[in-house]
Image 1 (cartoon, helix red, strand yellow):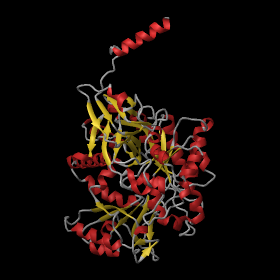
Image 2 (spheres, one colour; image 1 turned 90 degrees about the vertical axis):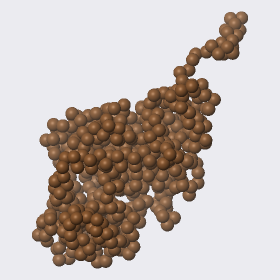
Image 3 (tube, rainbow, N blue to C red; image 1 turned 90 degrees about the horizontal axis):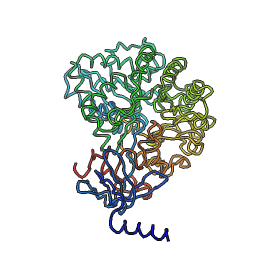
Image 4 (cartoon, rainbow, N blue to C red; image 1 turned 135 degrees about the vertical axis):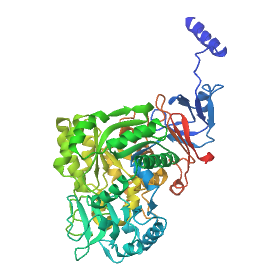
Length: 571
């Protein structure tokens, strides 16, 4: 009898609308294909947002009760809503800067680069620098002739640009090309010695050809930086502001809601903070400190630990270092010599004793360490260092130290990532971009065993987060996602397809894994009530459509903290 009376009471309450009142949301996204990346509820139709936080996730009917007279309602009309894309490794100000320089990534050959440089000089005064980025000697047709190790010789470029110094950065950022004017300004002669951790590429007679690898880049960069330093403080600030504006717009246009910046100085972090306060930088920033002066590092690092500044728009709790260079410039540190350069195994750009000293400072200050390592030897040495520093906490730790790129691994080291809790911060697009010359550099068997081995790492329990390394590659997440799930080259070939990610693994690498890699999985990375309302709206469901349709996907909207910061329909 009591049970009957209780049930009747509940029925009357429901029928009379006297149940608990649901607070009305500020924003509701409805009628969508919502992929939550939350295992407790993988799919949904609608999401309610209050302030900058997700209030509820469910069906259209379930979420309709959150709609009030002041609620902004967006009908997704079947479009796909995913957690806000997290770019886990790129360079923020460099991305903006690249948008202000000559884009050499589309140049088909060396002759085209010379022509672009000559054309640019027509718009400059004598003595002004011509700056560009994105060239890659392995992608030219025809190859440069004459060449040294595939690199062109400066002669024709110098003839075409006699009044202006030229500095063209390699696509990888680990080499640069300078013309005679720039080399003369830097005092480069055949007698100039290679700096530690760098190489001046020379012809058979010992003359520099114009290419400077790794730390040798600084010989030219220093002269260029001295030139830039002569600008007024106002000019310098305006340049950085423009870079920030361009990078911010490029990020949100590509659906990126959080940007892991892979290395900024203390001074640039101050500037970033200022631009966030001014509303110039729209994506949330997770910044790695880059500082190679041990005294400054000891003094300043603890003062720059910032978590969740400006409503979770800036966090600084990571430290970035390098152990080697890039594969394209043969700077990646390998256990065995390069297949196409016998007797040469790459460069160690930072001595191990220096790395250990810096890493221990970061460790003691509670900073995550993120180390650039591309070659199999570079990765092994970094893993060895991490294990040494972790000591008796080497296993089952929550330090979440990262190796940035982790492109070429020895099979012996693959299980060590998971065992040591090391995150592999990899870039899918590097695989298909580099593939045309990987076998040339490493040989077939070595490439098969250890080149971009996503499947082997995942199966061993490793967390992989994904990024583009912009401006090395375009910030666009769609080709990057496509590379992760297809490993397909422009000519249709697949590069060791057994290493592909599944569709959901690739989406996780771009969302929740990126959040985990920044200690932020409790506030972002999935569409879950209580987390930040960061979303990316896609024109198609990239988790189900055929491979060939993925590249047709468009970014329709970018939403950060419940605010629409990019809408393709209004551009």
